[in-house]
Image (cartoon, rainbow over all chains, first blue to last red; front, side, top):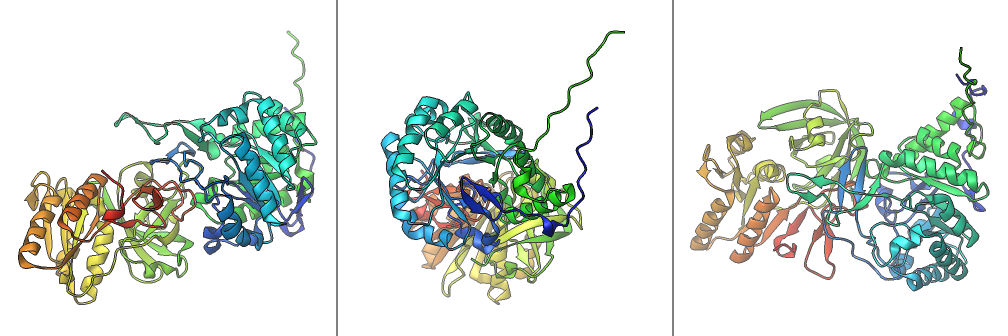
Length: 330
Length: 268
């Protein structure tokens, strides 16, 4: 039996400091809205106070607009859902002109997720967002891991040498820090993180959805039109935590934004303890547009209960389970 | 958008047989629910933990005031099965009213309301509002289902004086056959009389596809209330794409619909 954790005196929730830093940026809380679950933010204004977010990550932006995949695009699965939206987005120009001003005015950290369909369009996208945004974008989150794209997209997210080359080219094309969103479908998550770090990435977001499938046996059809889709929600949280922990252990200087099935303040604290500095909330926003505000208050209360005064002090504090007393045969 | 997200409590669950039930909810505080137009919907989720993540979409069946409203559901999957077990006092989280509803009745033009099974609610509300405005015959309900058990809340329609024609596939009540046959007969009469009509339909997708074809062939304005898988209901998940004709290949059931003009929908 392991020893109980060291006792800390509980604190009032108001005494808990949630301010944090990520790759040199200051955030008022460690909680961000995840890409693809937040659109461009306007829809949420009717339901929640967006100024209370730590930050937000937009829908993935490509150089040209995209219309997305055939239907059905989503289906619910056990403790999660599959999606294959197809990276529908308004494109760089419309994003900068019509969507960014609203986000900039919120006063929270603005991360813009982006992608291309091949090497040159990735670099073009980073360059045009960087050149067009002025000071309005804090981070470009590079999506090298969406399962819903063809044209060699898989290699960007699974082969470290390819990810390195792509990251390096985008970092050189952009004056905005680039955080790379990694794919759990990569065989070696630490190798991928190492590769993008050496290419100049300011941090990594992990994980993106896990490729999955569901079948309607009565109709003998896949439940989504593209057959395979990205699995999200609480079902993937244990995998996400494991990957965050592995990367944090191997690369302690690399800022990590943890993602995967966060529904509560306790989920968020698990990611922080595993080694993430910030945490994204995704699928939970569909059912509950105000989820991040609730999770923020839950995190504050839980940290107070555990006597953790400062969110920065919670990062990576996971302690190992002590070894057993050696077995000696009687 | 006048929608809000709010907590509500189950006031009553009325079982109608055949898996159908009406859930009456009371919001904890005043909401914009009484501004709902027929066809607008709410996203409803119980305290389902982490198993069933997403809320389910339901057309608003009726509302009494800014707090009390009801939905009609049929047990279909896991979400509706959970709702069918809801008891008075159970908490629900609700977002709505969402989407764009049916056009209101216009003077000099009869609305033919074509309802199939659980697609009744928006058309039931349309008939209720026409009756409340003192013009019950501004609409006519053509209501079909597989069997007697699939035709629910008919008493309401009779009580309001809504002109009503029923059809069941097994002939257990009304005409034997599909509701689309009733529609074709009614359109023939309208044509013979030189009567101005339009079609408002809600029901299973094969029924809507048939209504669309009939309406387009007859040159009658036709509006379809569609159903698609949706996770959020307010234009974020982009799951509920509807194939359309026009400058873009898709529009969204939740924010552009759920009611679409028939000619816009890109179906065979």
